[in-house]
Length: 419
Image (tube, rainbow, N blue to C red):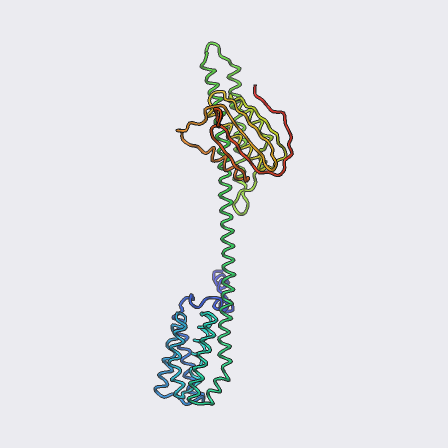
């Protein structure tokens, strides 16, 4: 079984050849070792050609020395292709000038030319090829006119080798660009997945903050009311007030538990990419009266006015959560029995939310929380803006948000007012 898996994972000869063609020779592993082996093979072929072909005289001692030395630079052809070609030409030119076997030095010369073409710029390759042909023909004209004409006749092979190298170079650049685009696309997908995960975590963090902060604040206020009733006048205990305060606490706990369950279900339900998608119904403008009623139970006098309808769900959810956090801050920081006005008004292309109270506002020296940050993030999540701070011409705190939305028909609802 393991042998079968190993054979299946081993690349086939055709795949290895294609991989070798696609790979840049300058970055290939064991390049120097492979070029040393190539130089030995080319030298063996040159010796055979010099011994068994009649293309000039058989080399003498000096000819053999020049022929062997001409193959040594091939070992470094990947690192310095132009210098290797120059060194090879410096040895091959006197070899041919002595009228040694002209075919023997051909393979090494072709390999050096191909290496230059496949690794260098096309213009440099063409200029170098023209220079090599010019020098070779000039040398051969001084030695043997017939051999010079023969060199001109076979110069087509030299041109073919050069253009073959240029074509392979362009092909490798094309393959490299495809691979780079694929890697860039993969990085983009990974970054998008990470961004979605980060956005979802931030959304869940905002939901948990809004839910827990609002519910805990209401429970704390209602508990204080129950404790006050119990300790204010033990002789005349108002059991109905205590029972109502405890019922309000239980109702707040049930509501918080339901919203927390929904949030946890969102975290558990994930798509194949690992990003939660199931979000359930989003709270919207229809949930604002419940928020106002919860704040009233905590002792705030809430005046709610909604003059908008049919807004996008995301905008409605942002209005709901911003109002929830603003009411929580008013109950917590505005003092006993604050007066709060919540106004939602549709404008051309936007929805304006205003939450104002007449309290003292948060303590500037206190520890800053995440409420204002969360409200601003919710406004930005739908492309809107939010301003929060003390009121200019009166006491209290004001939160104003402008959220872009399609044209929203104005539907004036009867304002809810707290007695």
